[in-house]
Image: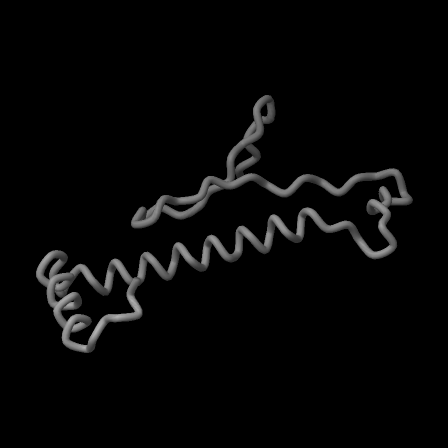
Length: 99
């Protein structure tokens, strides 16, 4: 479909895109497209990694000592452009331990 494009036609298409979106918005659009591609790639890797089992085909064994590690503190992630930082979330039923 696009194999028959000549250099003049490509230049015209680029000019039309510049007129439609403006020169200021194109770098932002390209940046967000690249960011989205990176996120999609990392999520695909994570899904692939979650589907794999450890070597030997066995599930990981529970710790020998019978004790489990304490859970990691949960955090609230700031929205893009938000100036506030991530902060810990208190667990329901637990009192905040601040001094």
